Structure formats: structure tokens, C-alpha cells
Length: 90
Image (cartoon, rainbow, N blue to C red):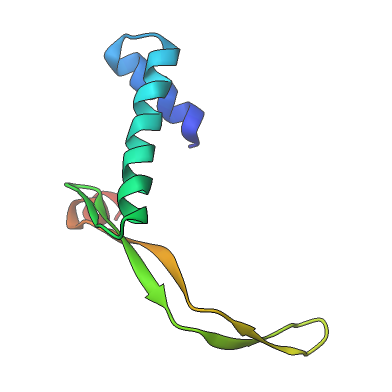
């Protein structure tokens, strides 16, 4: 399933135009991303928790050349599935 498929589902449920359904989906995604950029957690009941994790700096190796390089510390998104989602997928 991709973004367009989600827009189609929202369009079918709400009975609005596809443009309005796409605006709804875009708003939800922008809200999640915006809060993650601020370092806040986003919790959606029944789905899970989106959060930001700090990854430490490390050394890595280029597999082609064998050269060692330094990978800087960075923030990465993290998702923890809710119990309801885990049970539904079982």
C-alpha cells in the first residue's frame, strides 16, 4: 500500500473529492513529521508510537575499498508498534 492507496481509502470513507482526501493525508503526515522534527513523540492509539532516537557516531567500512570512515552522530526516526497492531498482524 502506498500514499495514493491511502488517499483512495480516505476518499471512499469520507465521500469527499480525491483532492480533499489527499489534503487530509498530507496534513496527517506533515503533523507527524513536524512533531518528530521538534523531538516530540507521536502516539496513535492502536497503531504505535513514532519517536526520534539519537544514534551515536561510529566508524564504518566501505565494502568496495575496505577504507574506514567516520559516520557522524545523527537523529533517526523510530517506530514502536502498539499491542493492538501486533495482535492484528499475528
